[in-house]
Image (cartoon, rainbow over all chains, first blue to last red; front, side):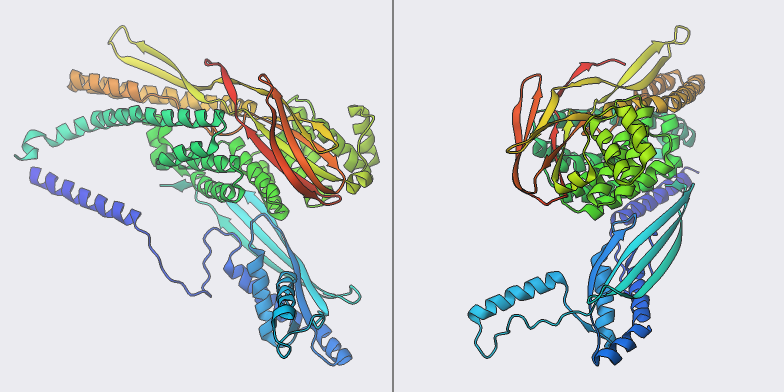
Length: 203
Length: 436
C-alpha cells in the first residue's frame, strides 16, 4: 500500500516536472503565409490579403479602364493615396497598401506611380545625380510620369457585443478618383463579418 | 529510511492543509519586500527620478498574478520619461493580458475564498482600464499620430458602453479632444456632450474649456437651441468662434499632478475568549494625499494661460473601492467561516495542529492592497491659442513651495488651425491621513 503511494507520488512529481518544463519552452511552428490563422478575431494578414486581392480584381474588371484606354491610347497610371484607419483597431495600413500595390503592379493592366514618400526620396537622388553623375547617365528633373488616378479609401468597423460574444463588422471602402477632374470612376466595397466568442473561464 | 514508515497516508492528508497554509503564510511575509519596492519606487517619483523608479521596478520580477500591475506601472514610468512608443507597446501588453484575465479562473477564485484576495491575478479596475486607453491616446497625440489616438478613443468608447456603471468625465472630454485633432467636429461634440453629462452626474464643476468647446461647436454646427441652452447656463460673455479658432494654432498641455494614494489594510484582530482562536478581518482602504502644485501656467513669447482641474483620479479610485466593498466583505466573511470550520475540525484530531492552522489562517488573512499606484492623483489642463508659426513654450508650476518654470518646449512648429498636445508629470505630494 505504502509502495503504491510512493509510486503514485513519483508519477505525479514526474508529470508535474514535464508539464512545468513544457510550459516554459517556446514552441515555434512554421505556417504557410496563405494559411488562415484567426487568433484574436482582430484584423490580420489574411483579411489584408483577401480584401486587397478582391478589390483590385474588381477595380481592374470595371468599364472605366477600357474607356480610358480607348480615349487616351495608353494604360492608366495609378497612385495609392491615403487609406484612413477609422476602425477600432491599430491596423497596419501600410501592409494593406503594399498588398494593393503589389496586386495592381502585377496585374499588368495599369501603370503604377511611386508614392509621395518614395517620390521625395527619388527626387533627392536625382538632385544628387545632377551634381555627381556623368552626363551620359544623369536622370533629368521634370521627367516624372504623372498619375491619372488616385486610389483612396478607409477601413471602418462596427462592434456589437453582448456578454462573451462580439460581432466584428469591417467595411473597407475604396474610391478611384480622376486626378484631372476629381471624378470618381470606381467605388469598391468589401465587408467582413466575424463572430468572436470569448471564453468565460480560464485556468 | 522509508518515508512511508514515518508518515501514513492519513497523516499526509491531515497535515497537507496546515502545511500548505503555513507555507502560504511565509510567502505572504515575503510580500513585504514587494511593498518595500513600491515604497522605493514612490520615493524616486516624489523626487522626479522616473528612470530610477523604472530600474527598481524592472529589478522586481513580478509573479504572474501581479503581471498586469507591473505592465501598467512600467508603461506609466516610460511615459514619464517621454518614451511614448515604448509606453504604448507596454500598455498594449497590459491590455492583451487584461482581456485574458477577464475570464474567471476557478483555481484563483478558490484560492481567494480560502486564503485571501491577493491570490487572484490582478484584473485592473474598470476605471483603470479606461485610463489605459486615455494614456495611450495621450501618448499617440504627443507622437502626432492622431489616427492611432482615434483608435484608442473608439476602444475607450466601446469599453464605456460595456461598463455602463462608470462615469469618466475626463475620458469623455479627451475623446472630444482627439476627434477635434482629427477634424471631426460632429463626433467631438457628441463626446463633449457626454463629458458635460458625466461632470454633472458627479456634481463636479464643468471646466471652462469644455464650456467654450460646447458653445463653439454647437454654434458651428448650427444647433441653435442647444447653443442657446448652453449660453444661458454657462453665462459666458466671451467664447471662441470656430472661424477664429481655425485661424489660430493651439497648444494643449496636461499636467499629471501628484500620485495616486496607496491602499492600506484596516485590520480587526480578536481572540475568542471561549477557545482562544485568533480571528482577523482585513479590509483595504486608500490613504489620503495632498498635491503640492495648485496651479500651472502655459506661456509662449506673448501669451499665457492658466490651468484648470479636469480630473480627480483619486476620487475615481475611492468610488471604485466603495463599489467593490460589498463583494470584498462578502468574500471576507465566507473566508473567515471556512477557515474557522477547518480549525475546529482539526482540533478534534490534534490540538497542536489546530493551533498551527489557526496561526496560518490568521496570518494569511490580508486585504488585497494592490492598485495602479503610478497614476497621477489629478489632471490639470490648459489651452494656449497662438498664431501659426514657431514658438517657445514654457510650463510654470505654482504651489506650496513656489516651483517656477519647470519645463520648456523650444521651437515648436504650429500649423494654422492645428493643435499640439504636451504633458508633464509632477508626482510630488504627501500623505495627509493614514486611516480609513
